[in-house]
Length: 341
Ligand code: ADE
Ligand code: ZN
Image 1 (tube, rainbow, N blue to C red):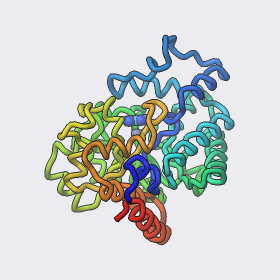
Image 2: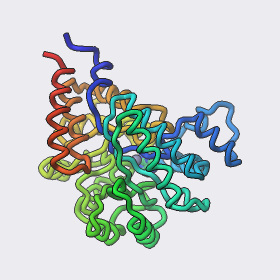
Image 3: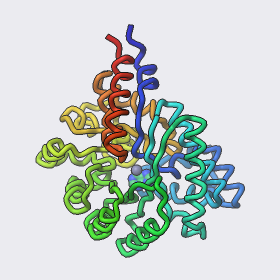
Image 4: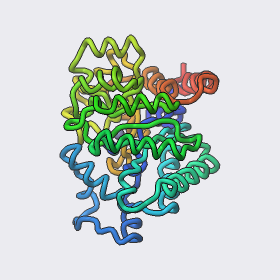
């Protein structure tokens, strides 16, 4: 007999490719770290008021505030270990996650301190929760391409094996991707993998540019691709991956009803785009990976499709091809077993 959908979602092996370390911090940890470092959080009657975001800009203000409270290697270790533990408890086996170096450099935290704490947290999570992870420093696009080149210099100068690529995040509407073509070319030439937030609150054109000019084969969010049928067809043909985050759309996009028949993620999946399911900022959006899969189930996708989306997470991962095909065979068998006859 097939298991309930919630058990199915929890038990199938999953990868998570779109998770921001700072956005993953749970509220009690935010409060403790702010107290530890004397960072004043806005006075609110309830913590939930801090987590009410009318748009991406408002969200990013709170994201920066939260980031200020993460200062020493022990803090980075703690937030990494906690985030990966929560992901593992939802059945994630592999995670590629972003962090925002510039949000901490501004407060005098050295890049080496961030790496020291994060890498130790990753190792401990692998030991205790059997979850493998890799790291993606992301450039804040609002700082501009000159700062982007400095960011890349910093990343290349201190490059442990776990750092496998770079990302581009923050507000894409006033800061489109095209000025980052040269920086992305240099990153790719140095052997880093690349991804970029595009088509979240910005137009489909940003998705086109992220692919055509930045060389991305994987797009973070990408929802506005649905406004451009020709681009949609191109992405399907080229096997471009999209790291979709259902709950995020309620805060930063025009699609604010996850059950609507015209929700972008539903249309992307129905069209046959290679979508993956992720949490983005699970602490700030008060969600987890299992809840995000259930949201996608609520859009009308069945077990076979959810299983495919989970496998897409592995296909889109920046692991070597030999590892990937071995793990794919194993995950496919586990998903087929969980789906039942
Ligand atoms: N940083 C963290 N979450 C983000 C999002 N949804 N969009 C852009 N930048 C982000
Ligand atoms: Zn994101």
